[in-house]
Length: 165
Ligand SMILES: [Zn+2]
Image (cartoon, rainbow, N blue to C red; front, side):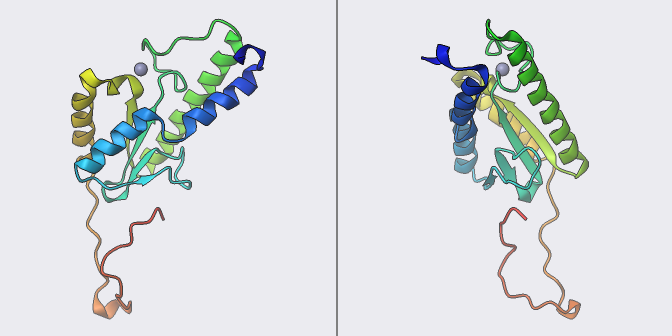
């Protein structure tokens, strides 16, 4: 069935599968949630639409599929045997885009964490999460400060709204 698809059609099919709630991403989210971390998902106006956004720590987490993001030296990154040029080009473009987005984010003061799918297999999962947690802690943001009464703001809300903006 897939043989009759052109590379771009196949890519469309595969990226549809990839784009939402991929299993590795869910695993990371569930673990973080259970350990008390709160986050936003796929915030549109942050470069690269990180899978997980933790504003409190000014941290974003990308959960990367090893194939799509070209994990160098990884077993899961095997170039398909047909349409090699298309795939090489595709992966190269993805990697360049990732690098650019990460740079923009870092320059804007974000802590950028990349987790690879292969690091999430059961045998290394806890270790990987511990690593993530140690990186999250490195960028604590200043707690939200209420305006002082003489600053002219009326303080109505009990806390900073947790929104992507
Ligand atoms: Zn990998």
